Length: 284
Ligand code: C2E
Ligand code: MG
Ligand code: MG
Ligand code: MG
Image: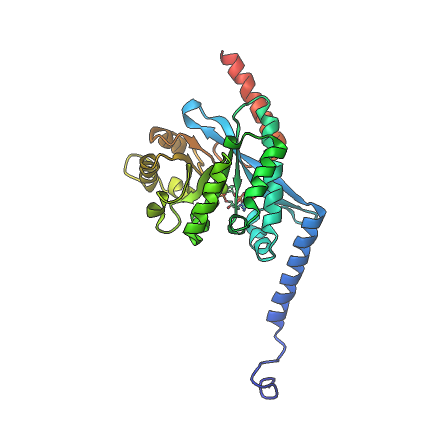
């Protein structure tokens, strides 16, 4: 027994623990290598205006890892590790700049086209965040009002006083703030009046739970809350025409989801916007 000769610490070799530690070490190495090699891409998912026949009025930037062996890796599989390695501010800073640059190319023909970028907890608490956002706006020339920074309630509520302070500073730059996955966090209601927020993104779980016909739904309740606090709602995770129709009737205004478009590389959005302009010209 390893325990007996070692002052209470089990020293017996545990192959399972060893394999886990080894796997983790390799994953860390791989991620650091990927960051160094610039293997990350930003994809964009259209956000549509339900009241204007579903035209695309903006996009959300979503990071992906173009892995040499694994292919396209979604953020759920690497963001936590990146966060633990302290790499999210760096990766997020790159996403922000890339997204703002890209937004400006679309604004050429579509003035006011909006760019939504996700912020993580470690970015919000990073003392450089305000300067970084200001500099990116200056460098790219994107009008600040066309940048929407998304953060989840859990991020915003970790330290409410500090969040409110940082968000106010961001708002002074002219950017807008969205609460992401709205309704899934804790005590969201009492904090809506404390945080300087402009947009609420209704979590897709509420959109998917909407009844097929009639009946009250959490989505509807959240829309009431948004109106009460003068916030613009965006419904997330709209997967079928029925949901889109009901959300439009409920006055959701804007929506995002596979029913309209999946996240895609920048070129896909460019093509979509070209097609959209051509259709508008035909109609007028
Ligand atoms: P999110 O910000 O809530 O983004 C929406 C997620 O829902 C995206 O997943 C999107 O692909 C997915 N989605 C969109 N429409 C539908 C739909 O109709 N049905 C379903 N089932 N899913 C839909 P994705 O791209 O895998 O991103 C997951 C999360 O990772 C994001 O959730 C966000 O929290 C985080 N994330 C992504 N990119 C970044 C980033 O650049 N920085 C930070 N900090 N977080 C990011
Ligand atoms: Mg988001
Ligand atoms: Mg969301
Ligand atoms: Mg989400």
